[in-house]
Length: 361
Image 1 (cartoon, rainbow, N blue to C red):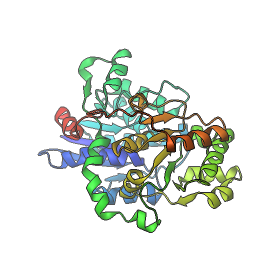
Image 2: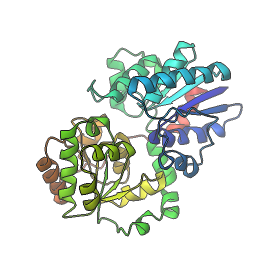
Image 3: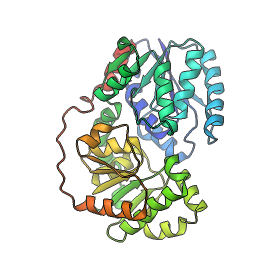
């Protein structure tokens, strides 16, 4: 059996590492890894392949950054050529990026079965490009690997046949279990940044809905700057966010007030997450990683696809409508003793990768 795996962004490298490790130990299976180049910065790409022991990509398409339509179109054209050349039995796509959608469309147009890992997530906000990618990919896929019961219910509600849908758990949880000990042994990020556990807030901001709109960007960073007067705020700065801050004339003020660092690898990110007092993010993956390490999280969005984290009290939604709102809610969350449910098995038992490979075979 030959399988093409499509990746392009940080979360996909982590998810693919879990499944690829299982595929590599499975007889008579060949995996062809295709990196679209959606994350082309070395700190957001190359370092993940090294740390996660992922094989170097068989194809690096080098697409880079474009508008959504142009980027997806260029990926679609390039992935189609790879599929035609390799003639795989399956194409695996992950998550909700433009790489995900391009891989799914290219495969289904060539009548190659598609497996979607992390299927069924919904924010129910069709203005989010990620939501469109999720929906179209799910309805194009032949196997849909859902991480949660809520995801399964979403797929059934949309009329996707039950035999296509498999509740397997979350591959990100598999990764947290597998790489957690390695991070503790190999990461020196706390020493390098002179940080001690529970002494800082970790923030990550990168979504277009926050970076592309001046009012939201100013509310978020105005709030983080105010919070930083009380407790250090560490921010691995995404290239898109740096450009947005520069465009709005905010970069100098943010640089003076926050602890800006370059994007970090997975192991360093794990250490920053698990030792933070609070995580403030607009990332879907970081929301879950905070929960895996039992760190409270604030999500700077109107909605989240990980609704169970909000319901259990580990995550709080914070629409970035004003600097005052962002400041007050983050500071209040530092001292809040709100009840958090001790959820067991919310994202499976750490065997999602094994179950995915079993179903593929």
